[in-house]
Image 1 (cartoon, helix red, strand yellow):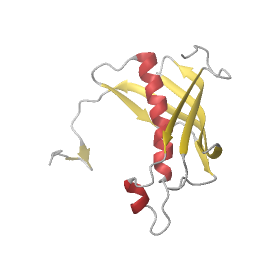
Image 2 (cartoon, rainbow, N blue to C red):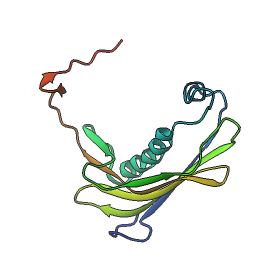
Image 3 (cartoon, rainbow, N blue to C red):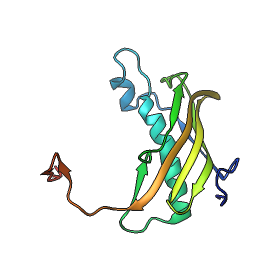
Length: 149
């Protein structure tokens, strides 16, 4: 699925589609009297594609985590439209432009389209695969005790 070169024109490609469901929870919550899919969900869908490609390439052993967007890596995106309840289908595409084996990092450009119209463009987004840090969670030096309810 993925090539091996660095900064290749296309070192890999993935596409996902999803039907728009007009009664999804976020249409009622975002925005008041102007229902749209939150932009963060579009970006997250793109990052999920990169995580999938990372697992395909390097596996998903116990203790592995994915850093999205990789720390200290430049990226940009542009919104030029919205997904609204009357739309039919969302398509997300990612083109891998760099594979860094040493850092287990994928860099990609991509698009989110609704009914064939490009409405988001993502450039230089990254996912880095690493080993889970087993240190306890803290907030300003105080331990955080997660609770399930």
